[in-house]
Image (cartoon, rainbow, N blue to C red):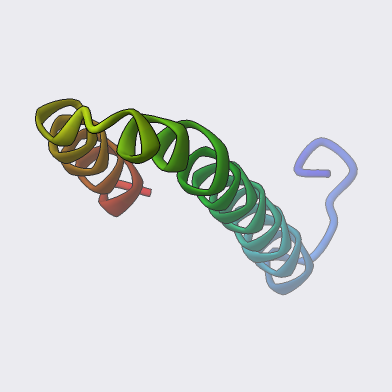
Length: 64
């Protein structure tokens, strides 16, 4: 887009749309992990593993 002399506003809108899409994908992945992996660990009684997983997920996801 830059090579095609597209206005900066249009480029920034596309960047923002891409960021939003990636954020949504991240949210879907976190939600899926919580619903499946974390739930499974909780059912097995692996409390320490659950806490570690949730902490790790929150740390990575908060960087997005």
